[in-house]
Length: 189
Image (cartoon, rainbow, N blue to C red; front, side, top):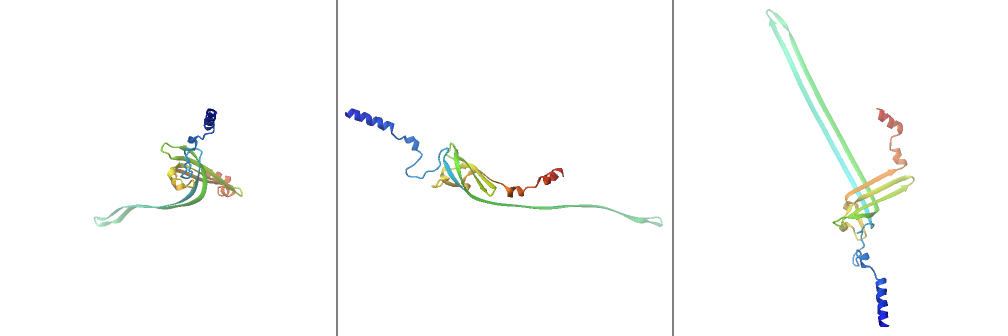
């Protein structure tokens, strides 16, 4: 009877045992962070860009050529002759460019792959539709696991090789584009 009980206990233990490799990435003492392909991570996008450029150019060139002659021949005087030739070339140009942009949002992203050094390749997108206006935010890049905060989020400025695109479509977007007749005239002329 003892042998039967021992054998049934071993069989039950092997059938209902927990596979430790399945839960090996989760620690009892730390927060759960994205670490494997398919894991989700929240990206806090706080991007502010400002750029300005100014240039001025000025050039000039002047050249003069002159000839003057006067004199007498015998008792009669030769009329005074002046010849003058001049050229002038001036150019002045200036230009200014200024760009400002700001975006603040949160996006859930998914881990695509884990690189050999442990960094995570992520991608995510978010689409918001309000009154027929669609706004789509796409993000992808590489995140270091150390930059992922305890609440499984990461700031967008901690993403290397980040590609953040913000696109919009709808009534406002189409009203900012030239019409087909204007496009035709620009194409012709």
